[in-house]
Length: 107
Image (cartoon, rainbow, N blue to C red; front, side, top):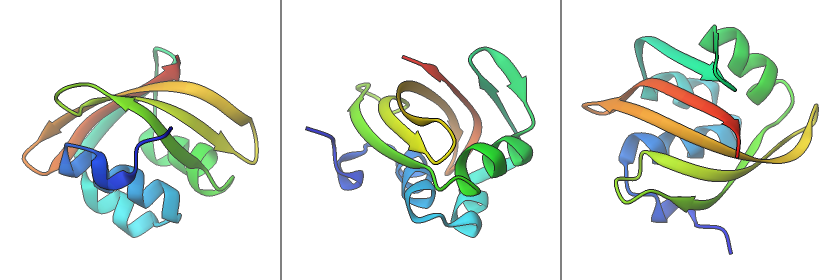
């Protein structure tokens, strides 16, 4: 059974997942630190281009299956209108209340 967003331990990660699931670009940008970096399956990507193409334009949804003890790593059933559903791993680096880096790839 997936975790609810309220069960996510880290506030920045919780805000990230909430924004993705709501299609909330402003909320998403608000949780990212200036200069945020990311990778997809080990390849560096431009966060703004990637999130528009993979998250917002194709209406992405994250259903969290599990989280690490610190809440900075998730296993997610991720789906969007482009790729359908896949099981993905997400890792976050957080400084203060902002995400400075996120990495995703197939789990």
